[in-house]
Image 1 (cartoon, rainbow, N blue to C red):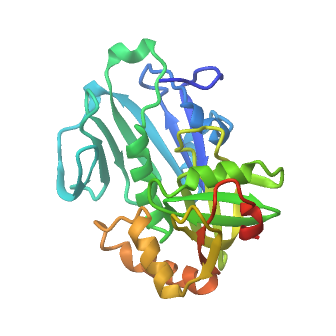
Image 2 (cartoon, helix red, strand yellow; image 1 turned 90 degrees about the vertical axis):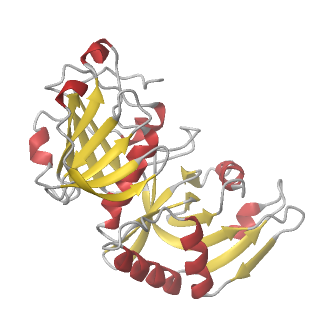
Length: 300
């Protein structure tokens, strides 16, 4: 795995959308190095890692080698796919599993997302820098952490323009990355993410944040900005068209594309309440555009 050009460390801190998670490998013999997309999201390291768990929205993950994996005591299955699983153990903790990793990777996280452990790196990997959170499973971890606050990740490109945030929601192939790259040519634009952004409701206002999980590490930013408009991309490449849609249609479209933990019935009512509020407060549009045209004019 490629690494950022920083010294390897026993501790790495990552900040995404007001969430801070610290990977502490000080008792594992492992050295940590983050992937390129995380470079802008790394936090200043501190020797007082344990103190971070006392602050709201901070999670400390203690990295253990594979020989320390505890006996399986999880009894409730939330969801199982080919690449990840989510369970709950007998103590009420969340158990995130990447079964395709060799050996399998496990995150065991307290229900309040303050403390957790990461298992899976064998001792013979101690000579190699590593980042112990597989990309897909890291996203699932954040999805479930956000769900406890009724916030969510959108399958969308996001940009900041003159202090305002704009989301462009669409399925794979809808043109999110192309649109983000086109808008990025304007010096007023900061790309928050080309494929995934986080929307949070904080202090009676909706905010959009960048995320690190993108193919192009240059197309993301840790910035958070008040959300101003939401667009739903439609593939009509031969015309430029923008059209208002109603809140109910907006909720329906978001439910079809967002990273929503439907397997968590405890979290769904709050998420749905926030979605209804979001679509009632936010201007919603469908957007189709011709590649090479002045998309900025349409957006603004």
